[in-house]
Image (cartoon, rainbow, N blue to C red; front, side):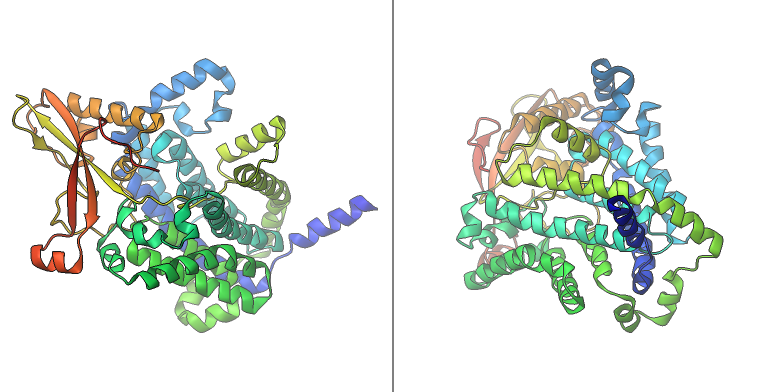
Length: 493
């Protein structure tokens, strides 16, 4: 009797929700665009990051994992690059990802396109190592995985899983801020520093940094409200869901206006589509666009989709258990059994069930590292990076949706953790060797003929200029010399 009741609930959860067909079709089209920019962004830098002559060659890591795990090594690193991890293979995967994204956008074999895109990006996630272990990468993977089941229209269970994904992204980020113990969140001073100290600010951050303190403090309250309270609206009646969508979208637009956070804010906005039923979307969207993205499934296709969705409850169970287990471990001292911890870790290695904790700690200082080379130890020339702050009069660039992984990662080096120093030392070694793939990640190489005899790294503290200072000097930044890295005080945190 009990088994029959559970089977009935599962069967009911797989029924199609008719009033989210338009939202589902639009989501798949926009997901295709985000996949495209993610693959394209990686394509122009992947060999410099993890190629044979890159900073962290992936082939070396695969050999190490195989030596430790043998024939089941693929279980811990699920990636296509077990077959071939050459530079050609790395670039071929990014190119193929761009092509399949376009096929998905125009509606060719959407199920297979989504499967291929998930496998390709999961492969790149593991190949990228520290350069791809970010929340937007796992967010894209889980959204892409769920979309595989979406091609025939959303079921009740699938709609819940998309809601659960958006809820985790927002609520977990809010809770992590509270449990981190960072005093800037408690005393509402976070935004006094955020615009100036974030990894890659653009010019919009400078303007927001000039706002009065009471406005910045109000902004912190708004952030906490949208991350701790608004996510619960997702599971409430329609008017609350619409409010959650509106508030979340406005917050993402504000973040885009102040920060270079690649495509995570765009993807968050796209996930809000599942809070907007077809009645709302038909009022907002042009009729021609509604026709373009709407589903048209024949009977035979619908039968195949129903059969495929029978495995969804098993995946839903894994996602729920993995995400709640990891979140519990993150915010509490509750003991997680080792068997459960290992199992859920394995689930996350396969791209789903992750946790999110966007900016739990706020940096109050901006330390910038300037790489210099010399042939004689007297005259030093500067290597210029493409996007991170350098020249004081250079306007911070707006680069959304691109993410330059090297520029972004250097922001993590000043605290001097061993993991960050390891890859940074490898980066310096490659520059000293004159690796073309690594040097190509930089804006300017002052030694085009041959690499210099000596390298050094100078550390500076940067601040935004005030309105008056910029008016007088034309400079966006001001700075103070700290010393030669790593023989300087570390940034904290």
